Length: 272
Image (cartoon, rainbow, N blue to C red; front, side, top):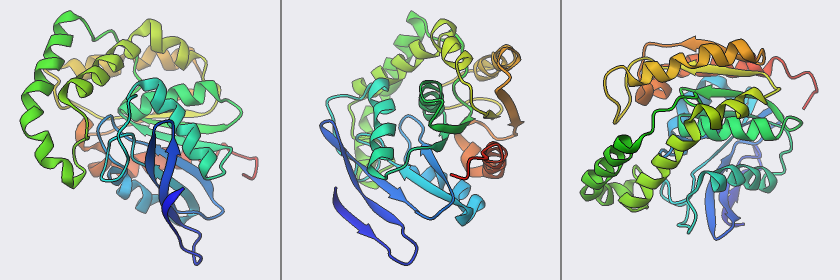
C-alpha cells in the first residue's frame, strides 16, 4: 500500500489499496466496533456518507472508499464493469484485514451490496440498501439511446469538475456503458434470484419521487417492485420510505439510513 497514514491514537487509516490494474483511495476509522463498508453511488464518492457516519459515531468501524476513477485519488482502470466493483469490495476488506462486515450501499452501491451479501452469507453481517437493488425491467432500446445522449450532452462539463472529485475521470461513453450495464443487471430475471438468495438481515431505505435523468413516476414504479421481493424473502424488509428524493437521501434523510444500520447490526450476536 502506498501514500498511507495511520493514527495511533484511534487506529484510523487512510491510503491506497492496489487491486487489478488500479488503486483505490480508502479510509478506515478503525476501532473495535462492528465493521461497516460503504458502497457509493455509480459516480459518487465516499464523502456522500459523512452525515451517516457522524450519526452512527464511534460505536462502529467505518470503511469508505472511492471506486475506480472516482474521487480525487482512486486511479484509472481498463475495467469499470460491475463485476470489477464487486471484486473491489473483497480487495478493500482483505487490505484492511476484515472478514465479516455489514454492507451499506446507496443506488449503484446497493446493487453491489446485494450481490456481495448474496454471495457471502458467512461473511455478511447484514445489508442496508438505500434506494437501489430493486428488480425492474426499465432498460429498452429507447432508454439506451436516452442514456447515451444524456452522458454525451454532459461531456463538456464533467472534465471541468474532475479536479474537485465531483465527477469521475471516465469518458462519457464509459459512463453511459456503466449505466446501461446497470439497467441489464436490474432486470427481474437477473436481480430477482440474487435477492432471493440473500440469507442475512437486509433492510431497504427508500426515497420518494424522481432521480437525475428519470421522468415522471419511473422511480416509484421501480420501488414498487420490492413489495413482492420482500414478501418472498423474510430476510428482506423495507425499513423506511422517506420524503427526500433519490439524489438527496444521504444528505436529508441520513438518520433513517443510520437507524436501518442499527437495526441490522442488532441481529449480530457473534461478538465480531
